[in-house]
Image 1 (cartoon, protein in one colour):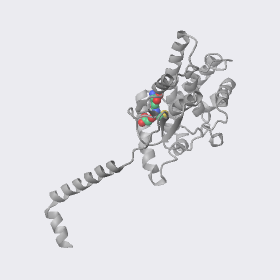
Image 2: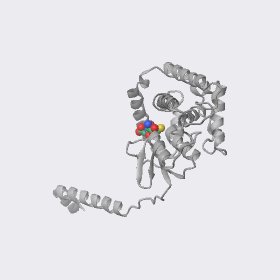
Image 3: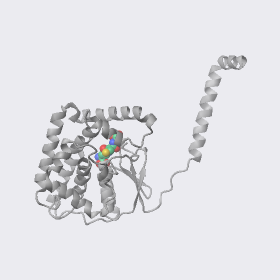
Image 4: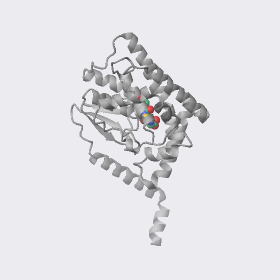
Length: 283
Ligand SMILES: N[C@@H](CCC(=O)N[C@@H](CS)C(=O)NCC(=O)O)C(=O)O
């Protein structure tokens, strides 16, 4: 035994080199034999996060937005719950007949063209322009209040993070949740919202909710009785905030605006039976 150890110590460099060569060889062989998933033609494969135990089955509003769009337009799709990252290191991304597309809005535009979806088009350029601005606000500003409540709010995040990371093995939960919380914290800081006090974050978010409710008024959808892609964006964000795992100031603000609650239900009803919300999991 001692002589083996002595040989290893005397030949440190050779031992190290051989170990690296063996490991590299094993990796090469495993990648050679690793089966690539079979992607069926004409099916959209949408990549989502590993399953959470949040009330809304697809807990990313952007994944839900694309799925809602595909369901509305009767586009055949399959969901892949995976840690795999797309070209922009964000979810969702899709594979469709060999093409890879990232970003919910790009995906919707890509699929609109491929499947010739005309039913969600607005009446004129003026409405399209307003819809564009509203959508930019929902996806790029309103979104951060959802992220804050789930990941960084000292009151709600302990429960929400457990829900978001329900698929993580218990042994790894501590380390993964710390890494995820710190990464999201940096994103919130860089976006600016992470530098504001909690009271300010929620008072702005509540004002946002009340303003959206005012903008909607008595209309069925944002542009009168015509469902459009911006409704799908708004619905996918509101539904996450409304069916919160714990009541938050934002979920309470939505509940206090009857027209918003009716709006959420109206869109859910289009998909009856609606199987993407498990309301029994919500507060
Ligand atoms: N603009 C993108 C935003 C996508 C996005 O922010 N996705 C979040 C999940 S809701 C994500 O993947 N976050 C992981 C990360 O930032 O590392 C879209 O519309 O798809």
